[in-house]
Length: 465
Ligand code: MN
Ligand code: MN
Image (cartoon, rainbow, N blue to C red; front, side, top):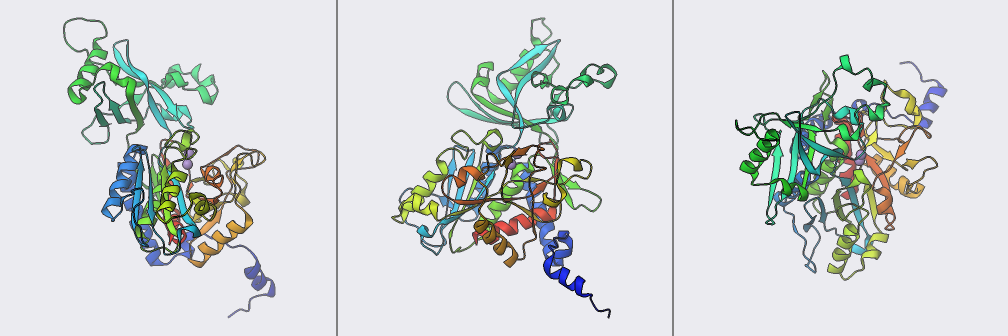
């Protein structure tokens, strides 16, 4: 055998060497990863809105022995509880063997995704076509939402106080909906618009019908026919839209991407691709040392404000209530706690390399991404994890053979973004961002690598165990 040169040997000792996860995983781990990807894809297809993700998470928790948290309940190590927040966010906890004042381990992901919300007075008729007016939710490239099949999900609260759940466009036999776009032949002027307004906000109108109600001629008969159909199916009238939350989301299903089937494409990876691994991690943790907490939040894509977003007090209130069960103070628990802000990061795209700094960005298949700080410009808006806490996470992941990488969101001056990390860090909790690298983030069809999803689950498991 050839002798290693002194330089080569020394290089192996000193240089960072974060290779493709495939070279760093066993055959068993790869098989586990494929299995996990299938289960995640199933969850993703059934959870296209925050409400659906919340209900599905609650059902999974219940099936795995979690019970609703009650104020003042007697709790012991290994007990599993959850609290649902208005059907749009959920917190689950497994009581640890350490005293609660030793702090809890929080994984915080979000279950809302960019989409088109219906306006409160959405339905109108124009040129004998019926359409819905929308107001987009979250950061989208509006032009990506034209000419793709859309499904309609949500809830309508009727005048009598009852509510109906709407889900149209997911079943094979369902109709779908569409934001129309202009044919290229007549788009010369449209294509001169800046990309942000190729389709303008007020042009994100969803086509929902074209047939009149009856053969007696009446104005707005196509709109009438749509209301007639909705009334027959859901018992709703036009005014009920005023108190509805209806969300148009891509109608297609998540699926494998690539001839090697190494990736998953679908709507809403951001951030169900971290929410599902976090949920699985807490379900699989039997008797953790520190109490494990997973929070799946709403409203992240609009800035986390509102009583289902993490700028509100529902998480510290829950920690307060939990602490009280042990005669402790919530703030003492929080001050001793640690949090993984479980959110996606941008993966390097070889077609658009210019926005990334190659030495400090995330790559597909290099494992779960640890992001010390987010923010924009001079780290504005970041909580920036301390070297000490970053080191703690570094050691933890290495000790459990988790394949991980680090990555900033793009070049210093290219833009930026934030997560819920700062809001949890502001509660005096050591917090760092950990999540899955994504291609085409915030597009109707986002792409992740299966190995990264699995390693994210492994990272969260290591953290809450
Ligand atoms: Mn996100
Ligand atoms: Mn996002």
